[in-house]
Image (tube, rainbow, N blue to C red; front, side, top):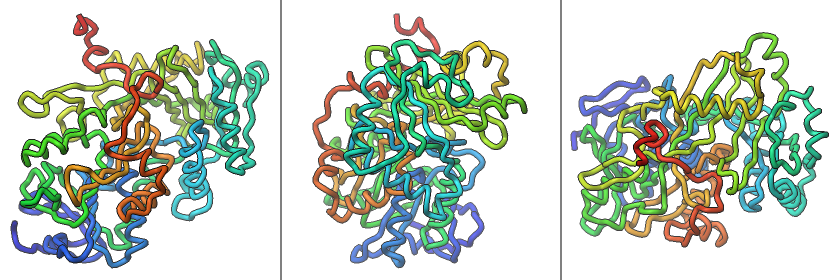
Length: 470
């Protein structure tokens, strides 16, 4: 490895292709911590990675903590699923564990000066085709919360908010859940702000693409090697890389000849299309005070929850499609897994026509014919990592000492941003509650995905080229 080279606050490309951001001068040698002192290398600077860095540096102000990501934290565009125009912040879960955690995170969004500027308490309007509403209400009651949360008949709910959802699809809807305590957050802005705060507190930020994990002669993980050849070492290596996680583990398994590193069926990388319309002034006035909308489906309908968020201050309204798709490709000779496209930005802005049509169909489920003239200005493919149950994986990796996993947001991880790192830190220190240890374990037994409407339901090439199915 090259000898110490000084870095400054400005992001400067080194001769071996890695950039570091910090508020103090550091050297590449600083990234190499003695084995006797705990050090942390976090792969991925989305909500799992940044939240982990934030909680670690606050608990251990003098610790060596490094975030590494392919994109600069303040880049104009990033591939992280949590880098987005906006994301839902809600505690409307029929799973009591996630309901409790979401309430904890939501409280932080509402009260902590670091998070509060990015949160907008607009409420949630959720069409329910099952007993979802009653399960959510019961969870809130059992957790001792008296939030403004009710279930209304469809006819009554349609009159709310000036009737803006009157043209929505209510086929099969039993009732509508209204939770005025929920809302949304400016996701990209909050991710940037919290990362900046981590750097101010002493976290190092490295901009580089990771090529593989590194191991010692006993198979323990010692860090990573970047695509430019730089080695970064730590006593604790935490993979928080979202959709890139299965690919990184495949590469590392091949290089180390340790097949136990592979994700296998534990993690599936998949994408979904999001779109934005630019509202005219009169349209913005109509929708500016709307809640977050959710179309809730069951496995029988074959659709995931389809949501629409209130317009931003710039008058842009976002929603997402019904297709959650895998992208099966060859990541190594003879090794095929689902993985984002092998470009630096995952081709996230190159959205093909059939996926844009998915956005049109989802828009119509909410706004009907009146939305046909809306000007569509942005489309993006967002990639994340999934488990069959949509549970996170926050766990030691059983195939290598010193290696830990903190990922699988399954497109619902952002709302836990303020607290994810708290639980990752507990996992690292063996203090996670037994219920969470079991729920988030690397090697737990998981049921199939048949009951999970949020699990990937398509293959990308089949959506783009239907004849490929034949």
